Length: 126
Image 1 (cartoon, rainbow, N blue to C red):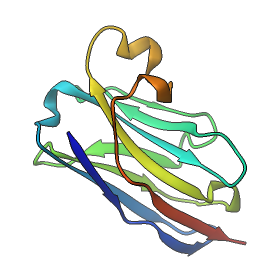
Image 2 (cartoon, rainbow, N blue to C red; image 1 turned 90 degrees about the vertical axis):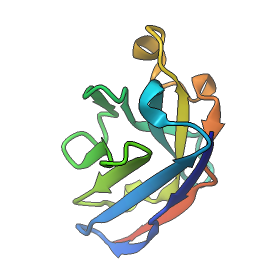
Image 3 (cartoon, rainbow, N blue to C red; image 1 turned 60 degrees about the vertical axis):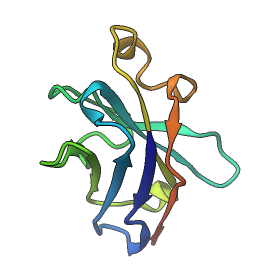
Image 4 (tube, helix red, strand yellow; image 1 turned 180 degrees about the horizontal axis):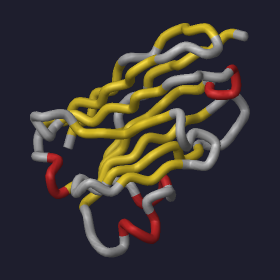
């Protein structure tokens, strides 16, 4: 699976952005998808995940502000971000892994994802 993330940019606090992650090489219907982010001098952290069957999961820090969803083509995953804060500034990565029961215990673990996009930078100014 090849993943291509885009949609990052510079936005003021309180603004919105939508990130997209387009997949090629495989259909995503059998893949769990995740978004992670990496801020300067911080470890990569979980943001959101989708099992592709309607269940979604979010980090507490973004709950209520971010939404992960799949496009009608089922091969694009989006991260809609609203009410952005300066602490949301980071490089955002999309990732994919085969769905299994194990996904539901480890969806927030970056080590369990097999495929990664190249990252897209989100900068939120105060």
